[in-house]
Length: 386
Image 1 (spheres, rainbow, N blue to C red):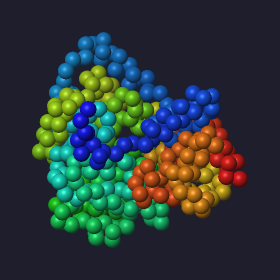
Image 2: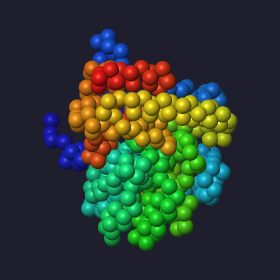
Image 3: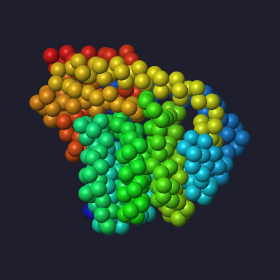
Image 4: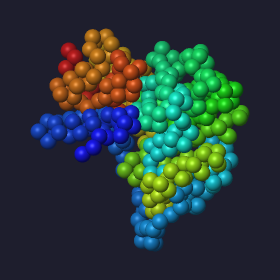
């Protein structure tokens, strides 16, 4: 067999799935593992959404559809974004995808040439850096620091943005820290993007999981709708991780290139899943509200628990469903401690370095699990740490 293409050396991974596999292997040996590693809500998809998918299948909605998504789905997304964020889009500015990852990958492939700079959050969702590197761009990390409640230093952004900057990625609420950007942050980002003619990829997958105040989108600031790729997905909000459904709104010319990439790869998102997605956006939201309320209770419990563990210090996140405790006082590096927590305490979590070099000194725990399991996991780690 011949050598693999060089570009494969530039492709990263999402370590959560690797840790999940290790945890499953330990379970197969008879060990009990508390799963706090994977960002998957432990709730069932709401009944009305499941019924919409089944009805769609029986109605024969199982054939090919347009690469950008079915027209009725794109129209529903337009209605939803206008109602939820106060922004008006046309259907030809909407692209539906099988999950959020293509909405990260394809705009980067479409816009970033070899050597173009892309500023991205670090620690941050690992697919950002992977996609930038794969496209041949230069990944420029922007530190989201604990000292600023896991926001970034505006002065650092001002220093890093330049004539070579093609794109800026923002994620709020953020994975892995749960940090939320404030109005002043978004306002300055918008000013810098306009001044430097930079496209912003705004990852808003956790837009509905906010515990204080309301979600703000960078696309709503002056001059930003015409240079923002707004991405969201059904996975977290509607407990639809396995359904693989995401949606995005962007300038028409970028949407056309994104759609062309769709045509060349997966053709389109599954038709009956798109119909279920319409029901998710336009049907009752009671289950979402209930889920967020439960997440908030779990957040408070896990933060208190983490702060009771020797060597751990944990801020209270404002959104998403992750905590990112500082573990430097333990004297161990992040990966060593994450392995120890899994193998000795039987609790699966992620090293902060899974989210970039600036995640060293931290662990990430997901509280998308029951309160009982969270308390069990915390107690196991507390005993292990003495």
